[in-house]
Length: 312
Length: 285
Image 1 (spheres, rainbow over the protein chains, first blue to last red):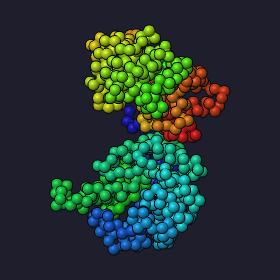
Image 2 (cartoon, rainbow over the protein chains, first blue to last red):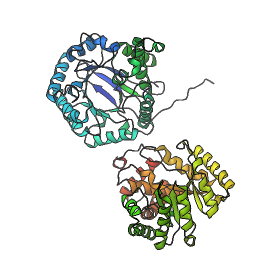
Image 3 (tube, each protein chain N blue to C red):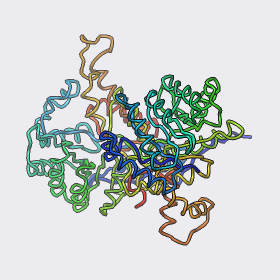
Image 4 (cartoon, chains in turn orange, brown):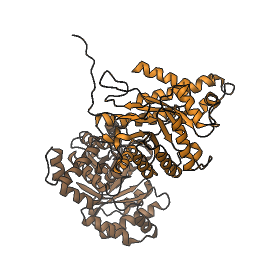
């Protein structure tokens, strides 16, 4: 008798999310564990967005900073470069200049940046605040309005500011990232609170908080894995939004992506090390269930795209 | 079912202040209320009590037993404080209970006290290395505690095994493991080993209005598993007993008349059994 591989099927399914208006990107929609197409349906590839900042990235390590040397002085040029030269499928614009400890730029200035970037690109845009709970609640409201009906992703809404941000995302027809701090029960709770405001759960994206390889990756991995299992095995609708891994910002601040060859000769070439670190971290989160990644180095993106090719 | 009244804990501000000032009023009032509400024993939790623990425990035991004809559960990690409490305990109202020994060598001497003063004792199934991962680990630790008790001359029927209830908000999968551990502990001796839990830890960290709901239905599930004693709020447990038939009907797959109540019970049982993921607003979903 021929061997028949056992198949695991589930009652739940991850929501399918489409972003953008001109060129769109679609992710989610699967009813199986990551890349288990042999057990069910995996209709879309994970999407990788290139990170762009509205401020010169002088705190990025040289390996990744030099890639954007000629373009990173202006977010519009930078975004166009990612789209036209690097073939980015989506852009993640981080409005870091609005942080009170950085330039403390106003919500109005941030809104203008968003409008300018939107006018220059046709791929979908993810608009991120500076991760400052109070400031984000005014900045993300202004940029939501500036990007009205452009079907962007706005983020990140957290326990301390979700009300105003979710209301603005809802009023201007955007998707919303809900971020909690590495706790599956709090992640579910935040998704519940946001949907209780009338926000459509199918427009949510869950960010259980990312971490770099060697710096707590296993915690994020485990929370993501359990979120996905709750979505599939328990058919828990609050856990069925796709998940985001905001990889680049966690990877490019650790020692392993910064210490020079001379300083740590046993660790190998700094250039390769940094790229490998970002690619490996990103690939791990694809395995734990992330459908949307935000990354920085084009070589790392290329490696992860190849990894996806092989698994799809 | 023995309810060990939980309200006299140093963690509660009013109780702590009364303990520090040696003000008998609030202590006796709380103890009396718990007795009237159905407690068969009163837990006196004085914390680690490193300074003046002996005198404090002595005062607590005599203060409570002055007005309430019940035995005391002596709750502290301070060996000397336990001994001081045992010395003044009025055994006319029943035998005291030491809270607790465990698989941590620092807690072994508690067994000596149990033997010396003919006291009952709680065996908490944790080791020095941290929290038990599953039912099997809890049972393995229970077996070690039982063997050690026999060495020290403490009869097995004087031991209450405690599988350690963890917070559902952070360790949801343990809720059902604790229920299974109760069943397994009972099978470890003939007659069955006695069991106890610190019940309200299940809802620690949950919203205030959710806490009694989780406590009550978890209590009923533990009771169905054969639990002998619970350190709990007697008032809440009396309410739980009034709803036991409803819970048992729902567990048996029957429908109950009160649809709203049915939803609350069903959702809570599903969370306890790890069938749905816990969130603070689980009742609203």
